[in-house]
Image (tube, rainbow, N blue to C red):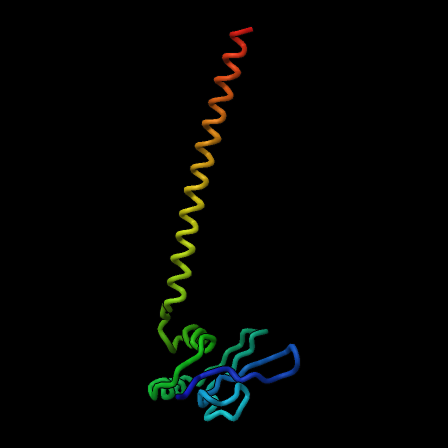
Length: 128
């Protein structure tokens, strides 16, 4: 299977990446089948060979997550929602709802406590 992945090059701590097509069993920095673009994460510079990428994608090449993000940003792929993103968003929504319910419950308890204090202070002043 052909994968579209990033191949690291550059100095230590100053990495840049080439977008390459390579066999899925080859090493990260191994010899690629074809170089298809360039990405510099420090300057956010991206150069993509759109025609060659379209050819490779039509041949069934599978992009990695990082490459998929770059291709979506470059307009070569439609943005898709992966199942992991959906699950994460559902968990976040559930957590937000739980936080809102907890805040409402805390507010109701505080209001009830304040009402009890005012009732207690009112009865103390009449007894004296």
